Length: 193
Image (cartoon, rainbow, N blue to C red; front, side):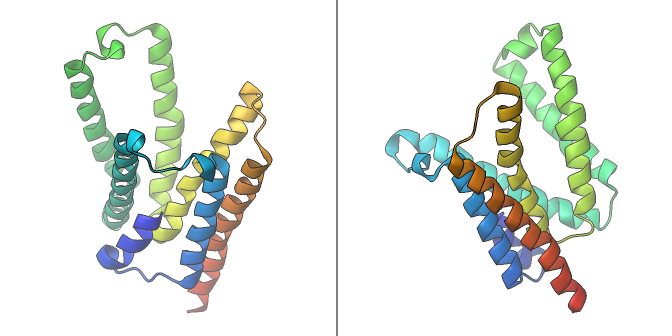
């Protein structure tokens, strides 16, 4: 969300308000509390992982910016078809080149989980997200991605009986408050203009 907050005004010419900045900040603080700031340490042993995480954040920001721009012209199914079609092709080629187990000898259960991942988080989740990009700013939409640590924590609690620490519970509240600020207060601010 921070990179989207920086890039949206530069590329999309979107106006960023104080509420957007505050909402992203509160949401990001909440995600840090869920994950645990104590494990977020830059060290030489983790350089490759840190670079990959920053690369992932940059790719996400570019995705949001490009998808927001394309939503002005194309429908969500067209955008998703291209994004995920090219992504699937890239992964397919990479899987064969790296001789990934799924491509060498896929099992029935791996196909089942692949189909479920395709329908639930990719199909329904990304479709809904892409639809939202037509109606809300990139900065506001980007805060929604921080529901992932919230839902991951809650699902781990429900299915694996992993009780989250108190700080994670506080972090979940911060994420929800930050998303609410960015979504509802930001929308009210936009309506007043």
